[in-house]
Image 1 (cartoon, rainbow, N blue to C red):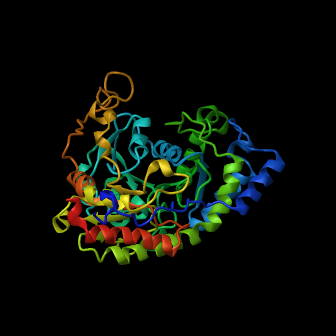
Image 2 (image 1 turned 60 degrees about the horizontal axis):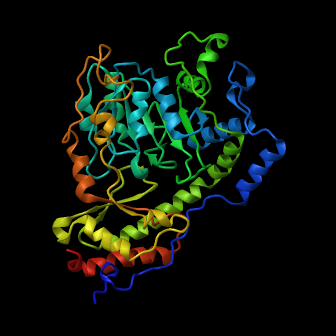
Image 3 (image 1 turned 90 degrees about the vertical axis):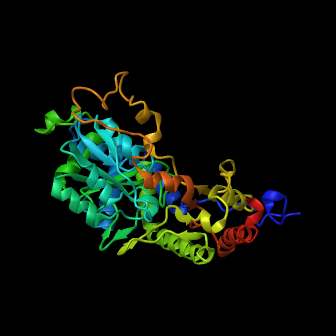
Length: 434
């Protein structure tokens, strides 16, 4: 009988891996502080001193600004909402083009659609998986208004090159730092590298309040526009005396006092959580890099990677077996994560299909039946979402990249060693899975 679990052998591990839990008694006390006060949200959707939110929200914004060394922080109810606010603030209009990544959560691209802009997909870097500056430059037209960069998996984007391109063309840079709180590029935090940045406080991010986000910028005008869009801008701009009302149809993107109180406690833990993730990922990489067909993704020069997920490249030519078959065998050696058993073992082949393969882009149907905003009198360009427009991402997703989530802050050295042992075992017996 084969030694491999996928062939009937004994697996490396049957015990579930530890659940990712970031909250503790500090968050419980913070929640009870709000409950005892009795004010669960303190926003008013009209021009009033409470327009900017309650005590916990405003304290979170002040503390976030200090931590990330940025002038303005605006709490919102999700990173997705924050992206929408950012696109509104930079003034994207119908017919404008916004350059986006094809390898990210869908909202990083649909944020342009929300304000009737047209997403233009640029390719990703071969090693770092963020937007490739050369591809970005090739996509710019006279209709381009902004670039939405993504700090994918915790790796900061190439701010030096992309920001230089943006400045030369008069474009805004919106940084999606959902996966990278605490990451750095040179002497600045990810999220503060562009004109406006957005963080996530979703339940599976580095720190969390269940659902939530924070928008940051050093530009006071952009910050105020974000605050307006967050809270029913159209009802406020008149009494506030705003003259520029472009994109000032607002939403309810307000964070509750409960979420803000939890987020304040989570922010205190971020430095420790980041350090542990880096330590765990470095340990796993030091072992898996000894397998000839596997290579850990490098960190950009001058940057700090904070590993929302740990990326690796797989070389089928060396292994003699396709990545997917190899990883199926690895997963069979391991157990799922406690409380997430239905998701299987948290090692994935690739990340997501390129976003332009989604029906909204393939059919060019977003608003109504006639192709708006991809087609119509408002748009003077012609956009293609055909296969092959981003060859790097298509190849990487199909054959090369795999991701590891068995490395977070709850993992012990024993847990990490079981993950490593599963890879080593399958490598040793890889001919059995060809």
